[in-house]
Image (spheres, one colour):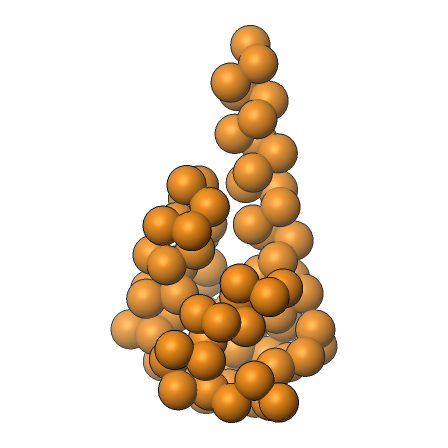
Length: 80
């Protein structure tokens, strides 16, 4: 979750506001542009595509889970 916290802090969100159960929309009030920025930065950092729904509120833990799933999928594809 460290990289996710760093990315969000670059978007102007204080690190002390970032916890596993923090919601992107309700708690952090990220708009659709910021969600896209977050998704693009995750892609740059992890070299995987992470789709973040702009209409569905997600916790930071759920975002981390999506990143982990995308990485595992990429690893599985590269091994076949």
